[in-house]
Length: 321
Image (tube, rainbow, N blue to C red; front, side, top):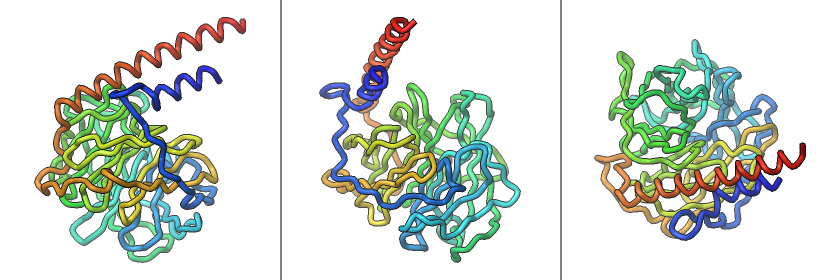
């Protein structure tokens, strides 16, 4: 437990100017996922057509199914993607296709750290009916310009419909897809900014003025041009994996893997709700040099703290044997 406390504190208290995390303002349980089929909820997206519905899916090793969950935590519909395998589904985001609102499911996990030459994002129109059904999806292959990597976060700018992925690693990055995804070629992902260490999900605000990248313990809030606004600690979860904005953009929804897990509503306020109007020409834009340097300093400090945690773990284990 001593080791766990050290490692946990490394994410939350790294000192002035480094990180940090403010306590979430009165988080509440929005709903608890009750469907036993959803044992590894790994992503969240809020419906554009059905008020009160949030979409989620399982991690690897499950069927290629997206579940629509209501305010009572019960599954209202299950959408199975035809002819698709769920290799390592990690995230889901709401965007658009040629006809209207569409869901993008990201098969982007790579726990082997570079075993897959490309990853895949599946897009299908958001169903107008909340009923169990099989849907056809369009597959887009994506490849990182600087080599394969593990990722669990996908987000789509509601203004431009452009897709982004945040990698999950030390020195992680935010990657931008082409403005228009193609099915006849591999779409190259270009690194445009640093990302927090161990990013597990991300989402754009409904108005496109801000976005969030979450880790296991905290939500990193950015204005759309890529300036870090603040970091909010998230409620204790079994394995915090998912994040989304509520439909009104005033709160975050934070979820976890595991059976019967709550999804928390985390209210926002202040600068998190007052992002700049921005330009529709740039979905995210690059972080400033100062933000990039600060991110590097955070990673260096965190590495030092994790190293100290490892040393303590070694001493504790050695003292027991």
